[in-house]
Length: 134
Image (cartoon, one colour):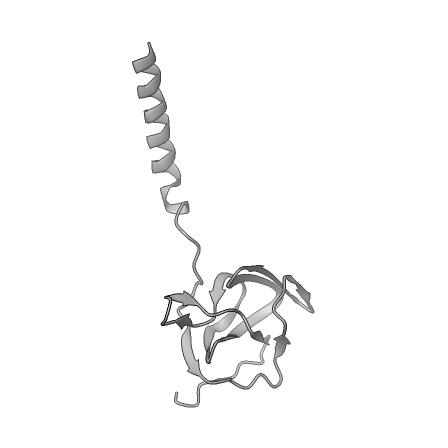
């Protein structure tokens, strides 16, 4: 009887894994960021500094240690995430209303993202190219 109960529990566990296996993976930003050297210009954008969970105009962010998620009531076309000596640029093309797990660049010394220094959100039709090399 005990063996049968264990087998049934294993079967249920396997079914749950098969059903939800794709959703058990870690969240990741929907676009791959481009690393920008130095401190890119944030003029004309929504700048959030210090980086703390909250609502900033049309944008709401939720900080999770060295990453954050955002949602917005207007299109977000770009996000610059400054941390350490450089920044990550998330280019959303025509725009998105939300994304998850955005980080600053990776610290080569420990393989983890730098802490969040400040964020720059380009909203609506305010798309710009912060990478002068492009």
